[in-house]
Image (cartoon, rainbow, N blue to C red):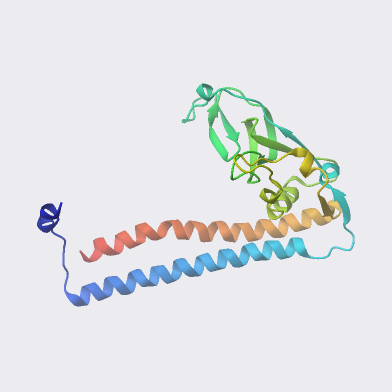
Amino acid sequence: NLQMLSNFKIPLPPKEIQQKIITEIEALEVKENKAKEEIDSLKTEIQQIFNQNHSDSKVKRLDEVCEMRAGDFVKVGNISKEKKEGSYPCYGGNGLRGFTKTFTHEGLYSLVGRQGALCGNIHLVNGKFHATEHALIVRPLLNVNTIWLHHKMVLMNLNQFATGTAQPGLSVMNLKPIEIPLPPLSKQQKIVNEIEKIEEKITILKKAITLIPQQKEAILKKYL
């Protein structure tokens, strides 16, 4: 209440110290905005790599490029929030749901959320994991690079193919006929190598952004 607020005390440094705090915090905010702009620019670069006209590409239906199947049902009570010894990550329609004692797949796969407002979101997962019936497991067919296909599908914005309003969903039948240009495997690998270099830069920038709040805190502690 107002009584409590009126008794609440805050440190009030001299005006020149206040100005130093403002200047240093504003410099961090400029750095943060610049990093965000760089991330957007790098993401655009990834799109441009895929949008290049590869004369050696062949137009293929999605079902000629990969197999898509829903995962297996798991009871909510069998999903633990914390990772325990002998448990495996459990992925649903919106990514990681928790951990289970069972796993359905092992290896590197793209998982596509197939139900809800966020259907069409894609996660690249590796190792042993349990995919629920709300996720589609994408298994590339011969001559298709898993990571290339993952990035291609992310850029396709699969959410646009969802049907239903109250509970939007992705139907494998609707996804199968979608056509995409498929470059030769060697070209796919070259694209993946380029993207991985860009993603390394994005990771470094994202890490720098996450450190900014504690850097702001350090400035306040230094002067107050």
